Image 1 (cartoon, rainbow over the protein chains, first blue to last red):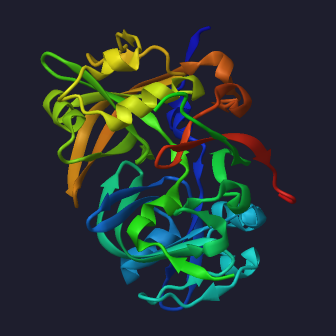
Image 2 (image 1 turned 45 degrees about the horizontal axis):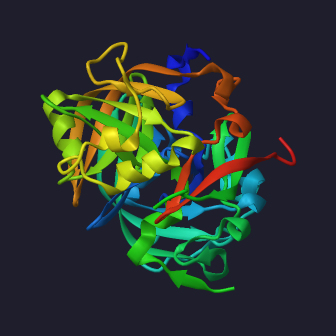
Image 3 (image 1 turned 90 degrees about the vertical axis):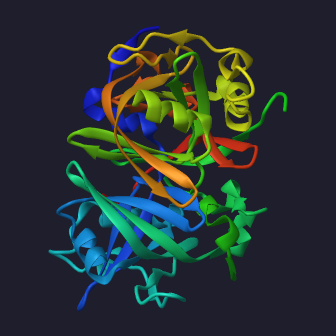
Length: 183
Length: 183
């Protein structure tokens, strides 16, 4: 069994990972993008980090309004996720193309996507330019999710069908739980 | 269908996510920890971000040596992952407890874990204290993976059985691919 070099696509070794829909609001437009380069960062305060390309329209809107929402799509939204991840909001009205519904947030001005199963409302805390991307750290002001898709605070993976991005146009859903042989 | 508040465990909405084994080397000891709060950040230069608790021993070793390796475990290593995630290297020899083999890296001094299916060798580029955690940005100097576990540069999820952390002691593996209805 040999090991092969993977430098060209080193990041694929850290996939599959949840894909989320990030919503940002400009003065005249609401936009959404798909992102799987994100991570929780801290619990006190509650923060998350999202990575966006420096030329992305969503990045521009977020740094203007200093807020964004993270929306967790389930399998049914795969087509909308694909549109969000492949079109630019500079050229088209992505929300319309995605055929999703915007709904007011609880704590910030930027809306959430109603059809998603989980939502995080975030206020920009800091951002860092790293290579061709920008890492934006957001403080989570509110978080909520579909009650019937959760089991003891975690996603019920049989009901939630969380979308994970493997690479290119390939997505997977976690469908098998594995257990420790010994604790 | 109602939405429930999730602020106490907001981060669980961004799970399941790949769990990796981070290896760090001090003057007299090699240590490993489990981490699922990590993300690729940029391609030029190739960078990744890993989040560690501020009091973690691995964090201390990484900031001392300025390097670390990221090792991607498959399902067979679940017990080792659990030990890496629940014990502290200050108290025990985790590598020994985990029953894994250290192997020299190609570009840095910190070793990799041979039994893992993928490896990223990283040099610390910068770090940020955020809440109770530290976000360490590493430049990827080398990346390689088991050839027979890959399919066109992505993990072959039927063969690789990448471990995703859902929460607590629950892990899942992605076993179902889903496809776009239209492109």
